[in-house]
Image (cartoon, rainbow, N blue to C red; front, side, top):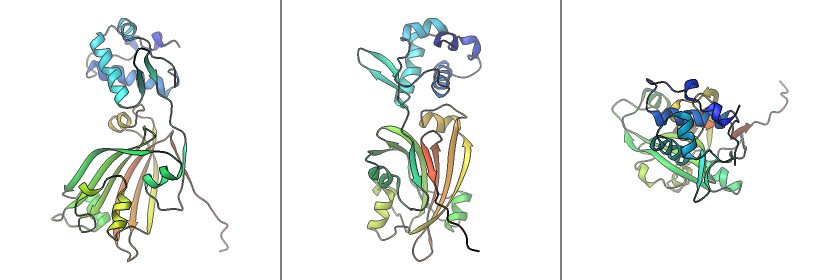
Length: 252
């Protein structure tokens, strides 16, 4: 299918489907995730997209800008807009308890974060259960979009007791480095990994299409004393991360 045929509005645009630029952004994201719009290929000019879709150039520009902010599209001055390259597949061994920053540094990648939430909050039911908190206590919560060499990889939501992390604002790059400095670095963890379809919000942050495959990881980390130190819920791009587990023959 040609890009022009793919963008014909009768196949995807609905008058009651929400903001026009959001619907166009989702259609373009779908073209990227299905392989119609290939990494490195140029996007048609704004005026051409506007003519195909019967949308204004302002609407088209807003959709493209939104995709550029999410990392789906790269805009080059004087050359136009191009489909961004897909992130390199990252393999993570499940036998080691390391932070995202440490994982990326070991692979020679630059890890960066975009803060989505950071502060002290009343705990959710999941946080109370996992961290042993009461409804009257507060929880330290940090939520970040994690990027490797500028590519969005995961959304990480970490919750900790306030005596372990009294001030979430002190976390700069690595949460585990902060905890280690204060003598609270976890030494072991239990993880649960589930296959999911990404919500619209998470898909937008991770620069892929809604309902695309992802991985949901819940991790409960413990101090050497056995106390729970951290409860983390992370969402990973399904096309960017592989988790590797080494298995040994049981003698039992």
